[in-house]
Length: 323
Image (cartoon, rainbow, N blue to C red; front, side, top):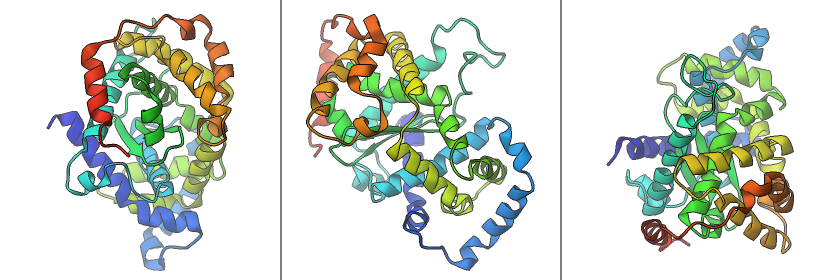
C-alpha cells in the first residue's frame, strides 16, 4: 500500500471517529460535563485571545480545523462514507482508492503548476501553504451531485458526482475545482464570516499545539461554531467569485496534470441539463452551470481530446459495483 493511500486511510478513519460528538452538537444535545471539562477551560482562554484570531491560520491550525469541519460533514452523511465496510477493516475500497489517486495527482500538479511569482517556501503567491498532512479525498453516499472542500486538504465528493462524470478527465476536473478551493483558502474566508468564527480560529490554533488530542475532543471544543460552518457549506456554498476562480484554476490544474482542460466545461454542460430537472446538490451551493460555463469562456469550450484507453479502463473498473 502506497504512503499516500495509507495516509488517506488513516485520515478517513479519524473523520468517522469524531462523528458521535458532531452528531450530538448538530442535534442540539450537549455532551456530558466530564467530556467538556477541558474544553470549557480551553474556550475560556480562547475568549481572552480573540484579537490574535484575526491572524492567518498556520498550516497546522488549518489542518486541525479542517478535521473538525470534516467530522461535521461526515456526520451529515450519518457517519457512513462510501465503502465504509472496507474502512472499518483498515482498507480502502477500490473506488475510494481510485479517487484518492486521481485527487493526489491533481493536487500535486496544482501545487507545482506554472504560476509565475512564488513565495520563499515555493508556493504560488496567492495559494495557501501545502496541507501539512497531505490531501485526503472521501466519497459520501447519495445521488445528489455535490462536493465540499474543507480547510487543510480535505475534499468530499458524493457518489452521485462520481457517477455524473463521463470520464476520468471529468472526475479530475471536479477534483481540481475542489483542490483550487483549498489552495486559495476559500473555506477560510467562509469560516471567518460565520458565527463565532474568531473563536474557532483561535481554538484551532490552541488544539493544534497539543499532540494526541482525539478528533472528538476537538469538535467538542469548537462547539456550535463548527456546526455553523458545516451548515454554511451545505446551504450557501462559497461566494460566486470564489466558484468562478476555482473553475478557472481547475482548467489550468487539469492541463498541468495531463488531463483534458476542456473536461470541466463538458461536465458543467451535462450538469446544466440535470439542473433543469430538480433542485439540490450543486444547484443550491454553486452558481448555475450556465453561468459557470459563460464565466469560463473559451477555456470551457475546448474540443474534447482523443479518449485515453488506459484512463477509460480504470475509470470503468473503479465504478463497478458502486450503488
